[in-house]
Picture 1 (tube, helix red, strand yellow):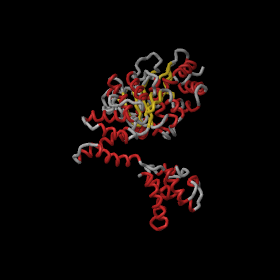
Picture 2: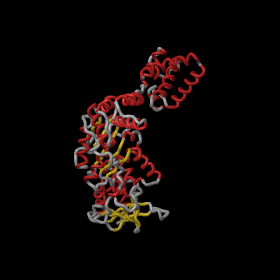
Picture 3: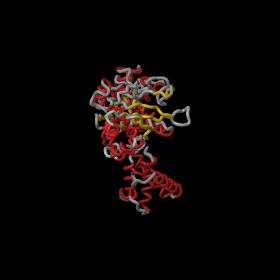
Picture 4: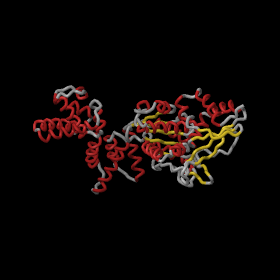
Length: 478
């Protein structure tokens, strides 16, 4: 009878495995495996990374156990040889781990540094020499529940956040998705949860990270060939707070790695808190599998605070800073700044700064003067749609034609002028402006603006037409 080899045993196992997993899973998780040796009924296989080993043990251990026993009998056992990068050598080294279900208890604890020939292999995202509980949570201590004024605008989100902080990973709010417009307190609430968890559970590992920072870390990890360390680090976290996840949109590789991190944390009872500027169902460029997971827990919105809540916010801010203002001034500011919390606080700071610099008492007259200018600068922005309508009314052309590919001179001129005015009167990017004109790219917008400027410089009749349209726009925002 022909003696079995490691290659023949593993190839037979692969034939069985191939029939039990999807083609993509087989290609991702089994094709990279290499059989190393067969000693008795113990088959050793080599896998490319620590993360790869953990994934197999977590998701495919039953299948592996079944196939290896079919080939080698009930006493069969699988052991792993893991490739690790050793900075002191020119070639990768390996670390041997037995199967976690083999009865051997010498496995390193998941998430901690492991050792090779007596030398610790450090995770680049963890401060050298410190255990995982010493990971800097990246939290601002000023963002807490005490400083977050409760109102109808945020009651659900605030209550859910507080419940999560009392029992992270142990409520139905996992993940907790907090959504709302700019300046309504998403970051404040997310960090308040983190600070409360640290106060209640000092030994838990909490981390606040913006989606931009997460993405940049991932790109650096890819560049430095340390993706496994990156994933390994994020698997350490007990409470992960990710801000502005809408910026993961259309970043397929970032979404893929976040999907695996999300799964690992959620399956292990860890807490996830995510913030975004819109409901999960409206997130663009996001994989369906991620969107479905965002819906597992609770989505809570933050709305614009009402008048009473705005007064409470101002009073809280003044109390914290040791400031007193006349009641009529506070009410005037709260009434006129009705956009978001950030603008409300900025208006108060502006008012106090002017009073201090000019050595004047903060009274209603000063408030009216300062806030009038402040409100004008922050809230009076004309829309692209309004600009299109104004231009089209002037030239007597249908607005819909601005989005068509027609080259008729009058329509082209109206389209170019609308782009020119949109660039001057709105804060939208060139890409966003182009989308409002039939999905044209930023280079088309740049060309249109240059063409209009050239006509303004050389054609008096056109220059006068532009001046008339600009007067109408100015009147709408004055």
